Length: 117
Image (spheres, helix red, strand yellow):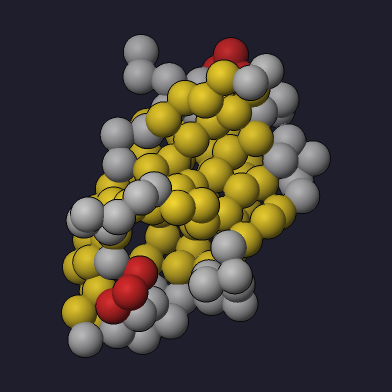
C-alpha cells in the first residue's frame, strides 16, 4: 500500500485554478501533519503549505491569499486538499504531498502543475 497517494494537477492558464488531493495512510488518521512542497526543474524542493492534525495552517509567502489547504476524515483516513487559485506561471512545478508523524516523512509520488502565460 502506498502510504501517501496524491492526485490532481494538470495544465491551466494563468489566473486559473486547480485542486490537488492527498490521501493519507490509515495508520496516521487524525494524528499527522499533512502538506505540500513543490519543485521546479533545476530548483530545490520548497515548502508550500501544511495543515496540522488540529487544523492549524501555514503557507509560504508566495502562495498566501491564493492557496488554501484543508483536510477531512473519510473512510478510515485523512485526505488533504490544496485549492490553488489565481495561478501564475511561476507556480509551475511538481507538487509533492507529504505526511509527517513522529519525525518520519512519507511522500506522495508528485503531481505536475503547469501554468501557461
